[in-house]
Length: 590
Image (cartoon, rainbow, N blue to C red; front, side, top):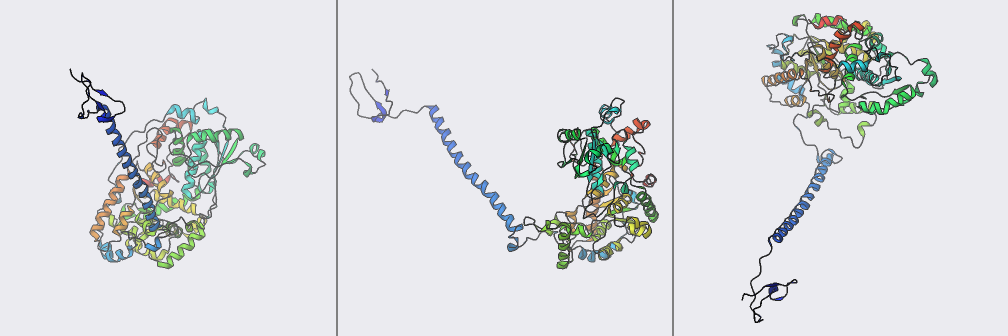
């Protein structure tokens, strides 16, 4: 009979096996070991793999923690307080050598008038695909903006007072946003106040810059505008403006924020004051709010009579001086004023004297802002990253490379240029027909505007708006608003040259560059500006990430639809006045 096998639970001697037979005799020879269970074997393998992966993870985690420490140490050594010990690494394009390049290429530049731009009107090749304006959401507009008999009798929630700060176009942004917020809260908007700033040094009021009567009448039926808070309200606060509840609204506040945080306070007090009011409304808002921005910016904000009268004269004079190019001219927004050069923290060719001068200006205008320990000033990186204002010389070389010849009339929109005679000389050499508001207007005509930077900027804005080509050389509110206004005025094309400054500084530091190569690169840059000029951002529902003031389409096309539907009621008046004077529209069509 075969022997029986018994497993001892504790794994005893003889390899854990007892062998026996029918006669109970023990065998002294060991039996071969048994095969383990397959499930047990798989479990053991998994445990081994888990232990191995855990070890590998711990080892990799050490490297993950170590790498950021190494990176941070590198930053401290390169751009931190220890950078002086190790020195800065040279970056291509980081040194201003444009004057040397100009001296090398000067003969080629001045003798090259074989331009492909026979007429300025041929600069722009791309055209925006014509689209019929989508109808405004009438049900929403009607109920929200008082265009129905039922909603026109709604009692306003209260009075809204805002203080607009900054320069001309930052104030313009605040005004348009204030109109939109007033419509959102069903509030009566008091004519916005302008905050006096130590840098801008402009004491102008709303009425000095814009036509108050036109502003009020253009928004009638949408938002009620008043010049002052009524006496019955002010008596509650002893006619003391500082006693009125002042709210500090977060930047880019949403519609939900205004409804949840601001509306209850307005309803409670009957009047509120929001200060400051720059960028205090998100770009993504419902269509009827966006509509208010469009109406305010392109219809209601008309420059005051003194500004529009002189602006029209300047445009007429530029057209007259541009007779060889069919009355068309180029406008350049040059940001090479003393304060802009100082603020940019860029170095040009002035050496230590220039650096010391800029340090004094920065300390005077911005106190210790640029001397904080955490503030690292890298002029070389600023230049490579395109943050340095273009000099007049660089603008001239770029435009000549793009094909604009010495017969081109150029209007220079600028403040007081840093070291004017020195820096303007090469631009004047490349473009003899160079004009400014100071050269076009008489001293007597400009006298009322002297000392008022916003009024001066309004003149530049108007002349630049109606140019065939607008050139921006540095960011800011002025070019952003102007590009948007030109898109609105010229069928969706900004007609704006936007330099690729990182590319430009590389070319302007290459001492071996030939004029033919430079021209080729500039024409490619012009073509890219042409292509981007007709771009329209995708707007899905109210998810807008770009500025409505720079890219007004497609939403602002809606006001043309409104003008045809509601012109009889007077809700939109003088829609053709998209700029300070109605006569300028005819000039734009030349």
